[in-house]
Length: 357
Image 1 (cartoon, rainbow, N blue to C red):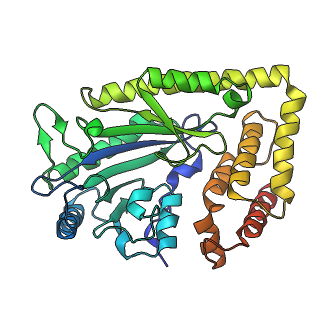
Image 2 (cartoon, rainbow, N blue to C red):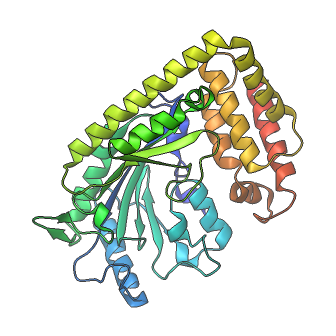
């Protein structure tokens, strides 16, 4: 079993809902793609190349002023449930964890993590530096991750071209190598049927949207991940400023939609959020998707001040700890155990009853 005591906050400080607009924006994430000169990029790399990259990265982290106390998790040595648990915490991608196939992750696949910042090693690129912060905190997240990037850049030979910037496996990531995103909750726009226009508008201004776990994941519980599409030809501050402006507009649209719901359909909305709360508090069996949708309703109710006594932090925790690997780990079961829906409902009831007691 993976030793998560190596991480003081479990790698999930972003859950605490302390950041700006935390009732709407769960987290802000910054990712920087980097590769090392002298080693084949991932598509051409052999197992020995990946292991050599990992060794270089571990040595650099140990010598770094900002990553010297980092925990290292070798995904190629972990069982599937442990890898899934790290994925459920938004710490590694499905690709790096090897969750889309039955074979094990490629040799050298690893997560290096210290506090809210870390790096995935040997994913699509040699390094994916990453950091997640609570709420709408793009600038703060970038400042912290940039410092880690600069620190490691003194110790590792990052592949860089004078014209094209940082060189990456996928051309769309070249240049800054930066992908910035926010995980945002938009039930008001969904209920007022304005979400289609908003999402279409995002694509027209160079942004994209994904589900709860980024690329390839479905939208559940009205949670959307909004991010920039390309990095080439623009500086980091331009990319962050553009995404920040659009996200502020989306937050404003969501707040307006919630006002419309309260004004035009107060009884219907109150009934919807209280039904969701009642089901979560008393249900005896819950699927993960059902739980996400009900949590969305309760989160909306808390944001509209219709439901008191439940913190956003508790709702954020439920998003993570009701997932299969977390439930299985808590109860000493397998992630495919047919009893998990019953276990999930019991866990949700216990947490909500404790909070409202």
